[in-house]
Image (tube, helix red, strand yellow):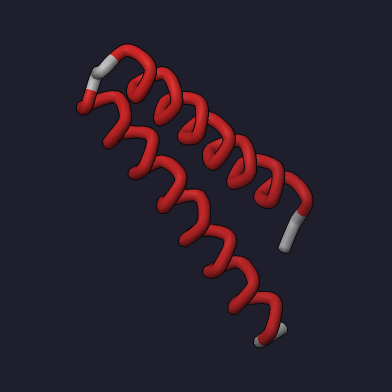
Length: 56
C-alpha cells in the first residue's frame, strides 16, 4: 500500500467520524449516515490496497 493512498483512506475515515459525531450531536440523520458511508468507504479502500499488496 502506498503511503499516499493510506493517508487518503485514513483521512476519509476520520472525516467520516467527524461527520457522524456532528450529525449525532445536531440530530442531522443525513449527515450521520454520510459519515458512516465515508468510514465504510475508507475501510473498504484500505482492504483493497492490502489485497493488492499481498499479490505483489
